[in-house]
Length: 311
Ligand code: TXD
Image: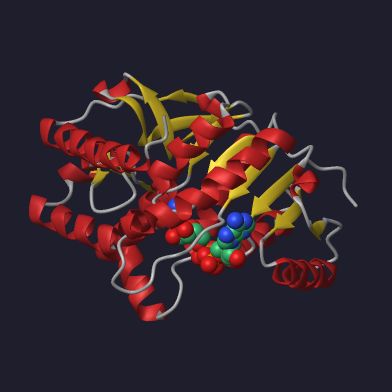
């Protein structure tokens, strides 16, 4: 097997397993896969190993039975938890998933103290904060995935709307992963031209509504479970930037210490990703309405954090 970095994925459900497949297909890292449903994690690992064999790839996916198996990981991706059911908001998952994130974070602290942690479990911003508190890791090593996905969704809607290439678009979506996400059109570019110069406010509002509703639309169409190809591809992009030390900018859920006028909260902002995890937060110039929504978004995250009584 190839001598590559090790990534552990906690939660071998839809997002976790799809992420494992994408990372190994790209020959980025060997994977250790853990789930409370141990037989399921084992079954998926075996099946994915067969897929890798079919593609003649010498990458390892191994199921692990306990948390000792995560030791030596460069990155731990946490997707363990319950997904939304139709009609549920991301916040409805708060208490149930907080218990899971608490216990998983304790194990990461114990067995992978040098790892970078990428939280995926919803409600994302709150779970990232909780993991930061429980692991006690430097905030640069605990981040959440949502902005890459929300930006990708916006990109897809813009490309369809304007009939242009996705690769010519660079979207920026900040804020919480939910109703209060903040698409920043002054910083969303089509061939380096801001979208505010291309579309009317009414069109931009429509794009925002589509982006905000994208997750719920998939939940309601699926009937059980929530989106996973888009989420897994978004985790993959973050993992790649970190492992390859790309120092590229991605919207990610990061701890803020005064940036954007916000403090002691995890929220989606543009971040430079590299081998340290979040190398730095990029401060964009926002319009007053944009920064107002961002502040509101931070308030709603803080209100949920208070409900958990972490400190
Ligand atoms: O943008 C984003 N951040 C998101 C977040 C996009 C998509 C999904 N989002 C959230 O990720 C979703 O709302 C859930 O909270 C998680 C995982 O979503 P997924 O679709 O992968 O859910 P599954 O398929 O139900 O998988 C979750 C797995 C499942 O196999 C459980 O057995 C396992 O988590 N699980 C655990 N594993 C380890 N340890 C514990 N304690 C545990 N509890 C459940």
